[in-house]
Image (cartoon, rainbow, N blue to C red; front, side, top):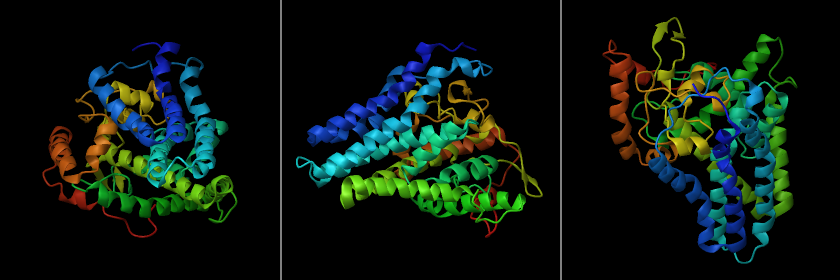
Amino acid sequence: MTRVRMTDALPFWASLGTVPLAVLGALVGGWTVCLLPVYSWVLFSLLDAALGMNRDNVDPTTPESELLWYRLITLIWFPVQAGLLFWLIWYVPQAPHLDRAERLVLFLGMGVASGTIGINYAHELMHQKAAVERWMGDLLLAMVLYSHFRSEHLRVHHLYVATPRDAVTARYNEGFHRFFPRVLWRCPQSAFRAEAAMLARQGRPWWHRSNPVWRYGALQAVMLALAFGLGGWLGLGLFVWQAGVAVWQLELVNYVEHYGLTRRYLGEGRYEHVLPRHSWNAAHKASNWLLINLQRHSDHHYKPDRRFPLLQTYDAREAPQLPYGYPLMSAVAMIPPLWKRVMNRRVKAWRRQFYPDVTDWKPYNKALNPLPKGAP
């Protein structure tokens, strides 16, 4: 185990590199509008290849008082992203040097940032106990019109990952282009049902004011109104475009994280406890800097309360390993034949390693079909 030092936290501030690139693209135009997606997708994949793996684990008992410089980047990101996004929405529609294609590519890059970084930071924040952190997470999710993700992730995904009840667990041999529309359709419904079920256990109707769906809707309406007020119809359209790109980025990562992995069914609606083996792990150094250790996903599901600097990495004896970091694996996922060629043999190896007694996997594959109405 290693100790936490302030200098160790600095590489996790790599997300701030997106800000000058977005500003440069807006002010200069031309080829510079491509810099933001290149930074997130290409640069960190190249850095992964150059820098290799980081398999060091920080002492998980490290007190929060020593994590300030790690936490600070997630706390300042909402005002940074909001300032950048809404400045772009105000500036770009009135910028004569930017044509339609340049505007679309620029906001594609903004969506990559608000998805790769913004939603990822929201994910970290919504797992915390402090109200200010959960509010920051809600604001970041509202900025990409995906507020239900908080309820779906906390009340459905973490409980039912790698089981039939989790829409976000990609089935074996399911391509991303089938997975994506299924998730967009099912997840808002499962989030709503989960919140309604919790209210029912408290003796309250689903329309009770404590249902977070009202807060989600209000925050998203504010974001849409602000985008329209600053940029008119064009600004509103660009805002929705970046939100769509951000959601696409999120669900690409969700697809990669659990593809083909299933928990053993114990009967009577019960499954084995979530273990590191039920998420794909990646120890690639650079992309874990950008993604604040999201790729140590095996430990996140095993110990969801751990803050990102304390997440542990596992070797192949305990968790399945991705061959590359998320940026490159997400690109591979967009090409289903290539994805299956890379990943299906790894899923089969995982099955042989952790469940050698299971000889027929067809029921497990079929079990991940949608559940009847009323199931959370």
